[in-house]
Image (cartoon, rainbow, N blue to C red):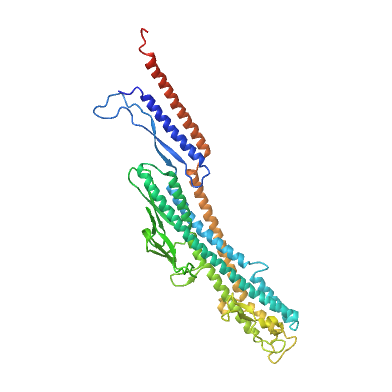
Length: 508
């Protein structure tokens, strides 16, 4: 037989459940602007009907409903969209970093402009044409010397600046590695907390959000794949469990987080914390990947870390030194070397104002081979521009003979086998042109990846983010349900009042 107070109990359950829904709605509204927050929902379910089943159960026309309860509080999330987001985030991380690296190089080289190496060379060539027409003019000689020094200074400045940026990229690689280690540790710690909560029958939605936020950050640095493992105990069926994180490679993926075991990554070939000139790979320590190595050549071309390495420089599978910045530094050295050697060769074939053979116009500061960082104008010529060998006479000074100055100007446009058959001007133009093309590609890929990521992000937001309109509607819905349950209790109170105080009063 059912209880007299069954209606009160049924209505009380309604109050509690609608109250939980209102609390969850308030939690959603409170976190409407919290980055990474996923809206939550109370999954309501009917409680078991009356009477229960069994041999001694009473008979009734049917089950009598006993109310509602909150089955679970679940966050609204789509794992497939999360996978898409992280995949696009990894691509954007690569191309954004690539685009930034090229933009920094373009800023340093500064072409085309009035202050770049190309303009310095053009001014130098122009001054040689003037000297060829006025070889005995001291002013024209001084201008040639100073513009030659400007060319050398441009080489020095560009090379030094490129080297400094390369060093900064190395610092970013070091910082990125430390960030990865920090994120892996935090994910492992969240796994530990989740593994503690779930077996008690709860869904730690906010911990899930925090963990997903960390996975999003990690995916922008390195390409990852994730899988989940149930925690057991009384964990709800929709509980996510602990996450296993693997770093994708061209071969087998490397497991870096498994339950609470976490691996840390370190850069190979460091010397007292200083990075090698060219990256070779990484070594994992602790956790599931203890002792494993990841060479640069096995890294997938995706993620900010790989992009930084591609810009900084690395040793490829054939032991070649590859990299955006090292390549540019090598080309600058090659250009400076060939230009200085050819210019000196022609200059030394001429004679100065005193009829003496020409000295080397350019010298290397370190007395070695000409490089972009060592090229400089001979101090003897800088102090005495009359030493400039503008004449091609070999028997003595010929005032008015500026033929060698013209020959010096021709060096800029002479084909050079060491410069891939191009002239000095042509080779530099090719270098700048190639950089421009790579920059355009990086920008295009950045925009494309960014657009796709934005599209996926919007889709994820449409699923998981808080809509205040929807929450306000839910709030009214749950409030009215709560009020109705309270009203039901009032009805039951009046019925009980009739039973208690209104019945059995005959004859009073």
